[in-house]
Length: 261
Image (cartoon, rainbow, N blue to C red):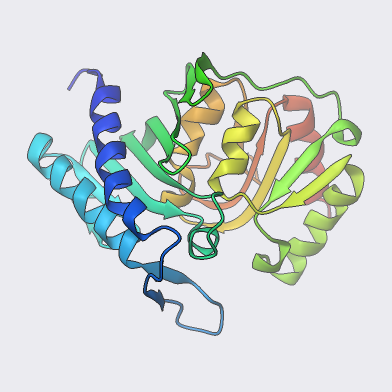
């Protein structure tokens, strides 16, 4: 299939997922813990309703496409085109009433992300990209996204969701970078990557990500001129330990610290 205008369909997916999610935000919603151990990993009715709504549209319009979703598993994951869905990235913020969450929608072709969107329906913001360009649409209007230059770590603003999500060894490596930057902040989940693409953040470092956590964000950051890889400088779409930067100089410097013996 030629790269048709998937952006219109992704907008439709974002709209239906937002319509499914918003009735649950800042309400007495039910929350389940899906973690098999002591780590809290919440899932809500909103997550499930949004993913079901998106799956229904994909099956209607692109029945040959595969789907990888956080809540309902994989269907035809070996197809040429596969949709990777995270209905609410930042569920802990969502259940706390904080707006730093979003729906992640990615389209991959032969395993490579070719289009991604982060939609925050409560604020009304959409960040999208195809690896070659990236766009913001929201209350502030519409504009192209561009990362900002940053000469080195001492000038950089760093985000991570939480160092507590890292194992001890990775947390120590992260700490080396954190001690070298100008400012370090915690939280944000997918929003941190979008702020990097928008030129407000310079570096995002995470561990333990799944494909649905990162696939949609790769073409947004890349489209804005940034770089996203694993700590070992491998492609990021499969998840794992991820580093995203707006400036290649910051990416290289942080990666050297993360992988130092």
